[in-house]
Length: 196
Image (cartoon, rainbow, N blue to C red; front, side, top):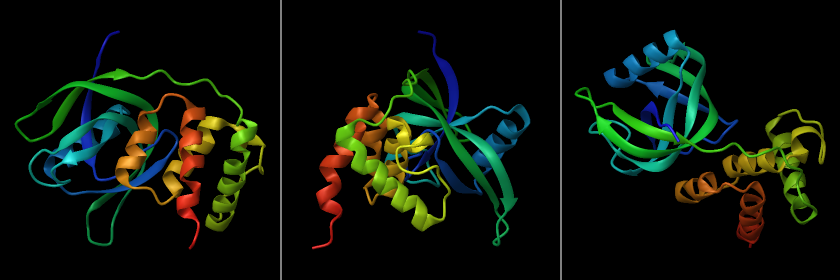
């Protein structure tokens, strides 16, 4: 399978397909990246940082990430560029190189997108949980078992964002190809979220 070239933006958080993330841009390498992506309409890759920091020397990124598309931008109160990105396709990093300005360029293999499949009966509780979370957040939805809340992939991705998971747990869920396996991992974690 042919590889694609993708600039990377390593972060201390995980972006999921269909998810949204706000970023403050201040380093020259990322300002140039955002300018180029804004002109071309192309995306860039977001990967969890395994070693290093978001600013300064190039960090070591995880091998799995999500393509980010810029959907909005504005100046923040502190005068920095703020952008909102939306998660698109997942990818696996095959190799990386660092440009002179510190920007990491990766050769990536796009991971197959899973077909839309319904939430199985054993995971129905997760649809109810997500509906309650969305209600509290003021996010409109069609109701439990309807629209996107009937889709295994959507429910898994959104719960992976909203539940209090560690970055490494979110990364593990991102790497799973099977949406039903992702939901099972979340079901197994539910007791940990109950108050004592």
